Length: 308
Image (cartoon, rainbow, N blue to C red; front, top):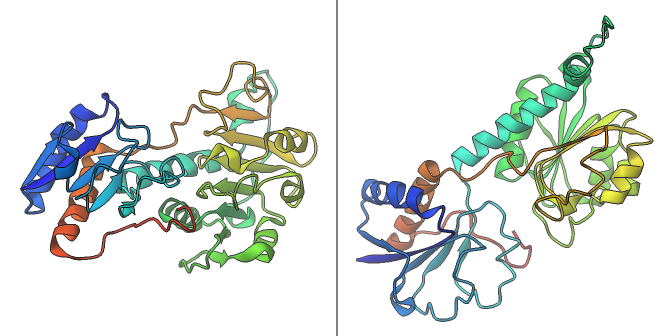
């Protein structure tokens, strides 16, 4: 019998209590799923970083910790977590992110806001450029960034992707290194941020890098709030940045008195770009447990030295 401990908020338990058992059975696994296993008997921990388990020391038989979130910055630095840690790469989360990013990219590309909010009797006949004439840069080419970059490329946008390690994606110009970052941002008209949050990526959009963008550029950030220097962005909105659509922030919920709320060139969405979907995530969890029991490599293991 495999013992799996579910360590996440109370709100998440009913969904996973329903979706995980059939996923385990489909993978040929017999799993005792509970929220109350004795620590020394647990084989796997299915964990949200804000879940009840914060000290992993007692889990002496645990073979892996399977993160329920795509982001691991809130758990990877936990010094008691010495077991292998796997990120959540959930097809449902990926599809949701692609849909949100494409939706807001097209909104800015087509200039929809002027017509949605401009019902003032003015007949506006400004035509947008074709997608092929609108360079887009995606910062971060992990599972989410790669999927968004390739979907935007399939719509005709010339897409440049940048990541800390060199990647290769069909239809996407892929760059890495500091020099590559400068090249990726120079002249970009739409920038999408989907990087992991590390010391190296904090404030990656700052006064210097924002100045590289084309005049009238758009920022779309569904990644992590601290990827952007807030003060530098507000200043850039008065110079070369036309609008920023932000789904993530340094502090959440975004404080009521934060200048982003009332800034006419900022759209705030409440961290809703995408989420882990229990039905599809359950299949991912079951596959990693199957791999662990079969002695196969776990999928999506976190590199502690990189932080993702």
